[in-house]
Length: 528
Image (cartoon, rainbow, N blue to C red; front, side):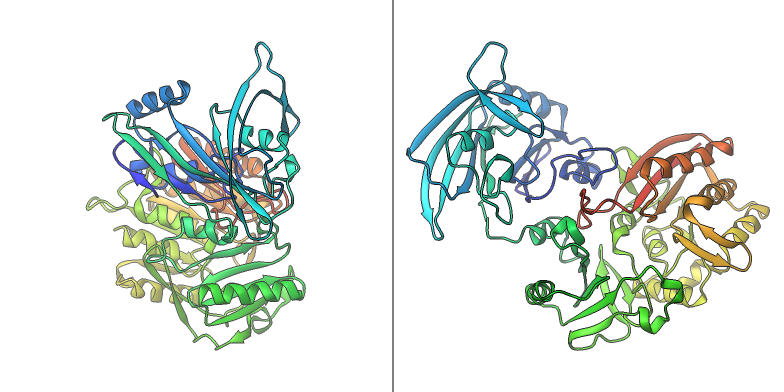
């Protein structure tokens, strides 16, 4: 964050993050992520945009009066914008202004001579200093606000931006374009404001994104590399407190091993563990499925991490999972704060009274339950494993929560849903995050795509009027549209009406791309 008051929010956007979500089921843009994160940001409005690969000063309005004033300032071209970029083809002129019309041609824009009715774009370029390696700094001042105009005009002038391969730039680790300065008048006081963010083209793009979204004093566990989305096909690396965990199906290449050592040094991790990914998890022993130490000192069993200010117990000798699914971090935070999204609050969560009743099915190590209990809710956790429920109780104790004040039920979820319905138990919030595949003696085999609708139907008699249903799946091949249809059709089949819905994909440290499609699908529903 660069600046915030009652009317404005100004941030330094990292490269590699969209300003807003490109589609309903793609990863959240920085605007979406901010707007749904804090109640004070729920009225954010986009005033201008930066391309996904462009870093730098990004402005949002927080009030209608700010929105009107800033929109007018941009329309009248009263806002001054300064960008800085690198090129390996130095401008021949010290100062240059280009004015043309931009026309869309597929995925890019082309510059055409001025003509009536065209979208006029005007950019001023000033040649800056030369850097080591044959790179040159160029300052760009867009006098209009057309999409890609700096990139198009720089390429047209013969000095395309380093890393901007769409417009002929030399390949690089990122597109080296940065919004360095934004000058405007305060929408209420009319005070002249000058917001600046220095460019750092040498910074690691992946790590910069994580630094933007992770509060180090509260959270020390998150994903560092998410496969092809971060340029490392088939490799996934998590930071878990003082340790790194790498996951891949194939043996690590020399480049991957070098990157792991670099990340270990950067994060000051005590050691690196590795887990071999396999689809045959049911045929794998706990020992074979557990991560193996690669380098450094062995982690204690158990060890502890922090997430959103809470502590959780983890272990590297427990098989496929270490005890916490990092991709649900933001959803756990929503449960703890009672703030799901803009204009979507959880009933009684975080309030002194009355206390909400939360049912956490497939509770695993009860991380969701801990978050709800920390917010003042009474929780009931159901799981088919006594070991994991005992683990969950220890997670309660780690956070100064008395597990005796909450219920931990061992058994099959489907069976217990029937029992709870007979007892006419009702809950304000029901959390459903089942495994993609599981099997029990009571209910037999469960497959998410086949049986999720049945699970929803059994949960509905337990949900209070106006209650909240959280449904989640990591079934990668199940399309978001089909998942939502299955969930919502099942709710409606019980004669209940959906009053509010908010869908979330996986968090920004699990970035979604064509090369690494989304797998996690989560939705919060308020049901009549």
